[in-house]
Amino acid sequence: MKIYKVFAKFTFMMLFAGFTFAAKAQQSTLGAIFYQNQYLANPSLAGRYEGLNASLSYRQQWSRIEGAPVNQALTVDWSGGKRVGLGLLIYSDQAGLLNRTRTMATYAYHLPLGENQQLHFGISFGFMSQRIKYEDLIGDLKDNSLERFDNRQVFLDGDFGLAFTTSKLNLQLAVPNLRVMFNNEENIARLDRTTFFTAISYKIPFENFLNGMKVEPKIVYQGVKDFDDLLNIGANVTFSDEKLSVMTIWSSSDNLTYGIGINHNRIFSFTGMYGNSFKEIQGFDNAYFELGIKCKIF
Image (cartoon, rainbow, N blue to C red; front, side, top):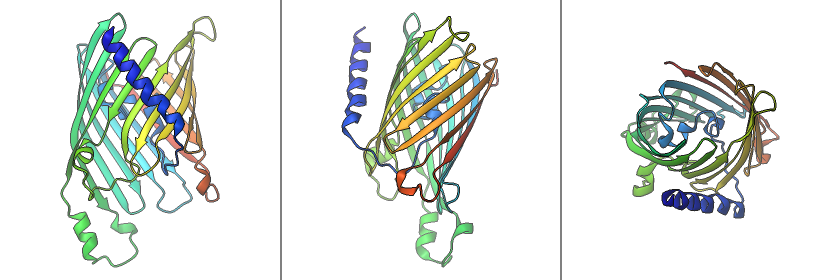
């Protein structure tokens, strides 16, 4: 298919260009974006599966450091079995005194191209708010600059995503934070803001081993505002008809993540992840953890 060849060629170029960059981004994204909840990174995957699904993720970094980053995300997505998917994403990012929250509504369209082949389009629109945590502030609470920061308007924002999937292959391209990209507004906090997201993965089945073991290696290449681009290489292995999974992800930001997941009847799943932090701060605390829960409501 012509459209598949063009999309695949473009994605491969974006991905493997990452090997020429050294990455030193100072925070990690939620590990759930790699396998457990790919809607977090790409709006085109909202409602990919039929029914109503909800997912919750929590990540705590550098737990011994005061004001360490905390990331939380809630997603709900739905599909009636047709081509349309709908979703809601609420993402909270706390670092030091700054608390940022994005709330996005998503529309996705899943176009069948052949047997087990789909081209996915998705767009999200919503708003982002930024607030100061005054309860943790040490200083002059009457500072006018603090009041001006906290009284700013809520910013409208958007994300766009594409994906091509088969029963084994998964190709993705997403562009988040569209408002800042087109307007270049300096008054929006942009620490570690992802500028683009590309990914490729391929499932390799071993049907006669460990009750249907599957191995899915994956490469993710992300642009990061004001830092070098980020390359992630990982693999997810499922056993016993996908009831148990283990995963590992290496990042060019000098960290390694391990994870384990349990899936009960494809209705409820739990994921736990643990990893080491970046070299620059290992003298303080070299670990972080992430927990994830996913539920098929109906």
